[in-house]
Length: 147
Length: 156
Image 1 (spheres, each protein chain N blue to C red):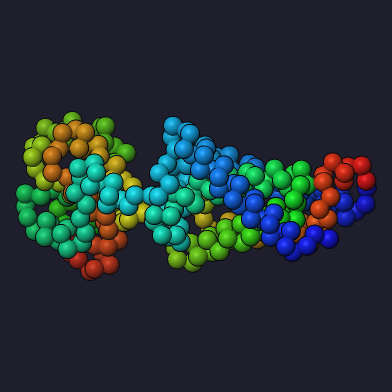
Image 2: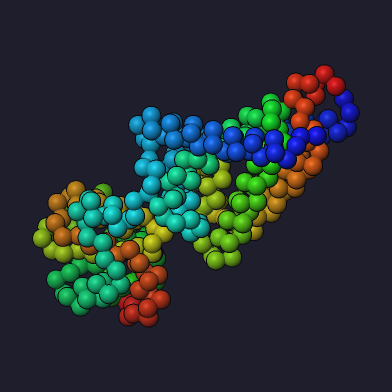
């Protein structure tokens, strides 16, 4: 397998699994997740629930598409866009001193409050996502295994 | 190389498909949430609790019949509170309610508050007290943050 294909496989699987994992708790707990979204003070209150229902399913769907390597450029682009959005939300939250939990992977006040470490972690994810977007070839994952 | 047009179509389909799936899933599940979030005030009004803002809170504070309840943790209450407010941390409701019922009549007007609009403790305490039988409960949304930002008197 070529180095590019190996890299692509690693980035697809790592980001895909990350987004699938991140979506599960949000899908299972829509009400606490909507409270977390509200706490970021970025969206009008009436729109918070719609966003909270939509976002985790999008994370799940693009995670599956990226792992399979189907419409992978589009899935990769959406993951990059979502990570940018999360990063902006967290940076403004830290800058404004909002005392809220990230809500990135767990809901209901579990996990650590947002901090500079959360920003650093998301920058790391964003770097992997940028690499994934850059090297994306649109070849399905099962074909990558065949070389 | 995928064309930009095709990429845009795929992105749109992924987003619309996810939205459709999300809405159907939310509609079918028992713990689904309203698609448009009702405001805290609407929720409070529907539950029979009166939402109030700073001006009303200031007026009620001057009335000795009204009892302010601080739903934040006890150690936070100790550091500063709205004058006359007693500590009633929402998480300690079950252990405090018996003594509270023995001393505070059910028709006494109550005001619950916590840190500010972000916290839920005052709302949850108000709902618990309503279930306990208290008739006149006011929920001060702005809470401690709004009170102190307006430079109102505090008690320490």
